[in-house]
Amino acid sequence: MYPPTIGGWIRSIGGAKLVVTDSFHGLVFSLIYHRNVIVYALDNGRTSRMKDLLKLAGLENRFFTNIEDLKASSVMKEKIDYNEVDKRLQNIRETSWNFLKNMK
Image (cartoon, rainbow, N blue to C red; front, side, top):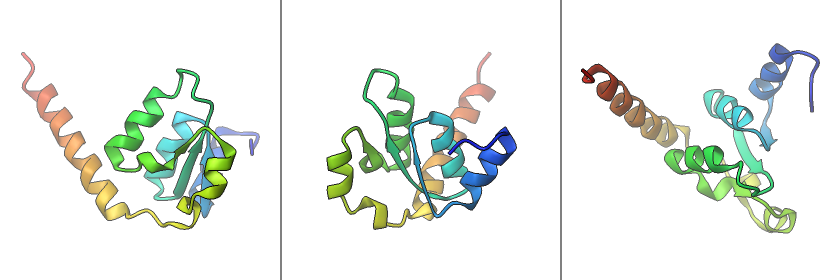
């Protein structure tokens, strides 16, 4: 789904019950808005940022490259524990900020 504006695209993600995306930014906004998200993308070497972010968030089971694997999975029905995701991402943010503050 591609609304005509970036704002419309972001609002679509913010209002969705389930986001299926093949883009890094779709994943990022889904995490920001605490949406149930699945990444369905070609594993063509351009997915490393999405895989890395999913792993950092503890959601690596939400990456699919095969529609049959996605259909066979129960992940679409599983709610994401955003308390845990937010804790994990906050720890990474703090580590990053501390690194930047201590650079000389």
